[in-house]
Every structure is written in structure tokens, then in C-alpha cells.
Length: 90
Image (cartoon, rainbow, N blue to C red):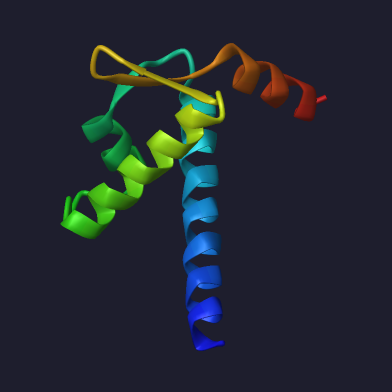
């Protein structure tokens, strides 16, 4: 039962970080950011393994569901993410 609590906490933390990543990219759009620039924008210059790993997971998972593009070293929100953001802002 303790493992479920630990994994649930990790899931919630991952989802919170994904949300922060997507929000930051949407807020800065149309600026294209590298992963290093995104790390700085999120306020984590430490660049430790855990921080880099969390960011890489967030980018991977958001790209997998069609909310981010990662190409040529840049990370950008997809048209679907931009449209959804526009609709939420109404």
C-alpha cells in the first residue's frame, strides 16, 4: 500500500511539472526555446540529473499526446495546444 502512495505522489509531481512546462511554453509562444532555455525559464539552473530527467520526461510525455513538438533542438507547443489555450482564455 505504501508503494501506491509513493507512485501516486510521483505521478502527481510529474503531472504538475508537465503542466508547468506546457504553461511556460504557451506563455512564451511564439518564442522558440531550447531545452536549456526552458530549464532556465522554469527557474531551475541547477541542471542536476533529477531536474534534467523530470524535464525530459515532461517533454517526452507531452509530445506523445500531441501537445509539444521537439525538433532541431527546440521545444514548441503544437497547434492543438495553442488552440486549446485560446479556448480556455475566452
